[in-house]
Length: 466
Image (tube, rainbow, N blue to C red; front, side, top):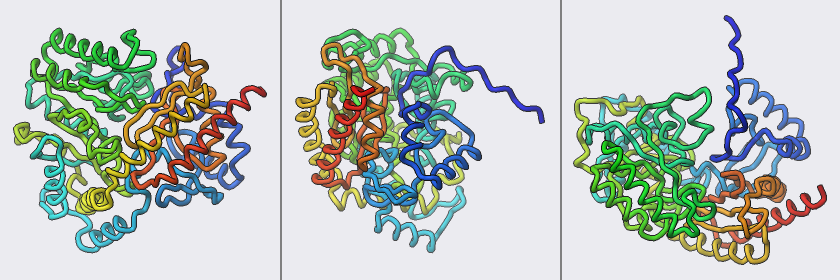
């Protein structure tokens, strides 16, 4: 077999967005200093056998255990995990969830797709009961990217249109269709392109460095909503607008933003699809992030934490009137109604409700934002603090006057935090993204923020010495 040539790189560096860069000299230096020989050998084997891709190759470290809010590397060092890919809402390895999964594996480990089974029906019933728009009909997939594409298929069938509208800088999945909706160069450009036709984008709302040139979040939201209306009118045939109700950076939507967008969608016959894959099930202090704004979508997509941080499952919730695809197969995945994953998802929702984790996220998140505001007053490098519940962003800048991003400091702070036992990721280059489990206590949160403050100050001292 002839060896394929390495595809040419795009001109210039790919803009950083979804995650931290793993090919920097600082990462190499940290790994050389912090990782033992056994870990480095495992990472080398990982890179040898897995196809390489940006963001995840080479890996940062090697993990041996995950329990509660902690991960533990193979050398025995524990880290509070404020990343977790947003799957660990109920913490890692929740005993009640593990017991439910084991029981279901004994009772019914699998069901061929053309047969109904009780766990899948019970999960669908539960999701309909907690849906932000009332009664819902559902489909399950094994991942959020597939669920997004199912949602688009439903919207196309219901409207007779094929185009989509979404935000630049958003992430909706890695599949060809989901990547077309996404606005990140890492997933939609280079050798992956061209993607699905008809994917239209607009600049998102923001606060700092608004792409519309506004001076504050409220003005940015109004400008963005006006642009969405403009595009819907000019295009005339947009099937659906797909968006995260709170931007993952994160940016909190200004008051009234989603109400204006909802009204615009209604005026132009466009369905509103909310991607709550990272934020749903209580992460923002309400069961669904869209409930903060009092706006319900036509279709809602869940994933990540739905499987309790153990099993992969995602879900599409649609208004009953959108049940228009009886003659077609929008999903029909082999594991769509897997009784074990369905039981895991149902038990996860029950744990969130029974343990009051949504309320805990709201309470601890408020404490965290208050503490971060205090740190901002003390540390000039913190240019902005924003978030809802346990979706929190800390933006590091070179100076507050011009809000010039400081990605170098953000990266240095991340490694300094790892040295002190706190794991998180950076996004958009200079934002420290903090997304701990809903089970975190106030004391644990305050301890983590003390580590964060010390890490930023350590990174600043290192920068001054360089």
